[in-house]
Length: 101
Image (cartoon, rainbow, N blue to C red; front, side):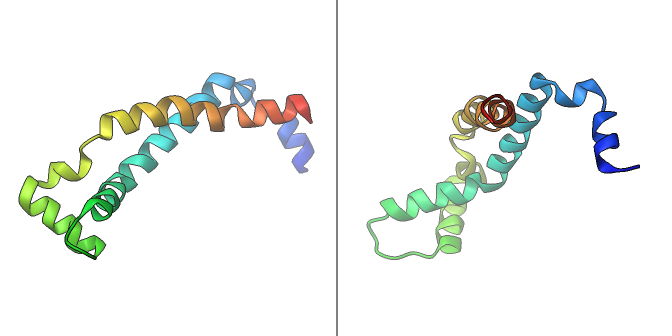
């Protein structure tokens, strides 16, 4: 089979807007879970008054002083953002591209 025939035979649910929005939101949510501790550590580095501290050193200090959960403080707000804003941003890209292009 050639690619054009295979694409034409694709099931209709693959073009579903709700599926695109859902999958993009979930993928952005998991990406946020992966990098949230890094972003938390970077913000703390910027706010630290004690000069230059390395990223791993800062993550260790946060974990030691406040517990490991402190690295994920604010994850609820970040998750809501990803599930709403990012799902719309990525999920609507292809339909808008097809509409305009």
